[in-house]
Image 1: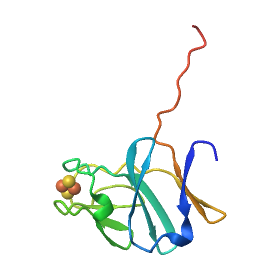
Image 2: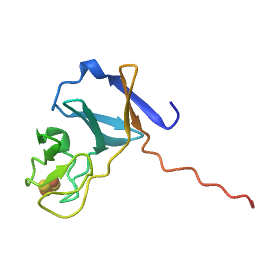
Image 3: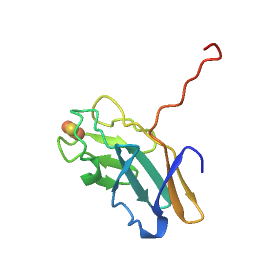
Image 4: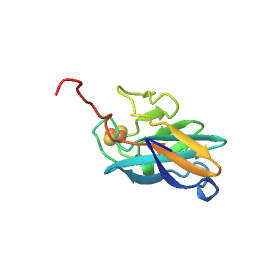
Length: 112
Ligand code: FES
């Protein structure tokens, strides 16, 4: 699956138990909540700590353990602060979880 990284089997993920993974050298949080999957960069916009994988989850919201900012995992928007999470595309394909690559898109020039 081009542009995606295989994370693991969906059946091994516990509901509302964030998983911390590293994709292309960056920390990424993956969450299974009910029948939805969410993935976002593990970088809280409040003070840029990378502890969202230790956050608490209610519905489709995650609360950062550092200072209590809460984010909607679907939109990435903060509920009680400014800024937003950097959401990544996540797919379940034949029981395997795949998350969008963190690498920036390749740029090229037609005129070298
Ligand atoms: S670093 Fe997340 S709320 Fe402060």
